[in-house]
Length: 533
Image (tube, rainbow, N blue to C red; front, top):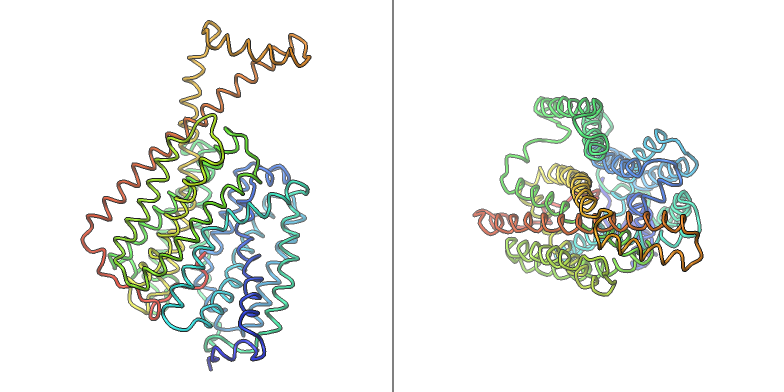
């Protein structure tokens, strides 16, 4: 029999203590996802891998969380909440320890996958406990806004927390910190929980492991192609070609298998019959593509301006502030049942303003204060969009398909996340190579400006006491670095201009699409699934 919400937490525990303890468990749970985004270069340097490998380890984590979602609900319904919490925490602590001691890429990827699956369990408990305590529709809408706001701020918070640690310690120290942070929060939450179930018990029979293997394998291959495709020159490499073939075969098998499992499909494809669900999927994909441009700005801050990760993290606090303000306002707008079209237009308008503004701010002599307001605007745009889009997707299908809609929405967020990395990597190589070659053709030994610049660099090194031949070599190196910096700068300008045009297209689509407001947000009947990172 399902436990009443009052009986889940022991009666003597104050509500503020309950919220604090849930946050203590949720913080390292979400931190495991943000760990790979903290400083990929530091991670690559410690492990001896390529930065691309570190990016893929993050994709493996995300793929595990995305694919394990449907199975997770079966275990969630089978085990009592205390047992489930302890199981998830132990798996995450042990897998973190393996990631702490290993220097083998295959081992790291395997245990990052295990972490992703276990992460799904712990986050499911914490977020479900949060909503079990919320009373009324308004509280739920505010709760969803807070959760998704935390999700958007994850990379900024991770960078801010981890950057000082990485200044003094090796990268694997972060995994040690995660382990020690997990322990007190888990023990505290375990001690205040009653030995009850949140949902009626269901037995573990007919678990569709075959669908899980097919689906997770397809996601891993999609991530591999999108992350490594540019690295291996796409279709010129046989591995990438075979991966694409594997994706087509696996997704075909997945579709036919779900169609054949009429009574208990792993992920029902029925959600794609609903037009507004597909609109929401398109918009969440577009949001994650736009959100990925923040990484391009971070690269600009590091390469062109020369900022260290700590100062970049401090500057991104402006972005987190924008998210905080916008999710609070958006929650109010959803409560007042304002039209989704208007909310989305405002959100994408903020993102368009950010990209156009940054396109004109990018320069070789940029300064920190001038970027704070645009970053705040970007936070306003992202925070305005994410909660309405996700709630819109789930509300656009019948109640019995709400969980499937939420799980499928996680897939589109995964696809947008991977796509943003792949698109930026592809355009970086294309644009930087084009501009670098153009600069190299322009800067020749008979170019007066180049000669003057080279002479100035050489004179600077001579003044510092370097020998003439050494000063000449260092001057040439500095000139080459200037060309590289200018190529990075031009790439950032071109990429933000391209994304600006794409956002303008999305705004026109939202403005002209006639059926946008026919879906009403319903967070009582249709609730997004707990594990929706």
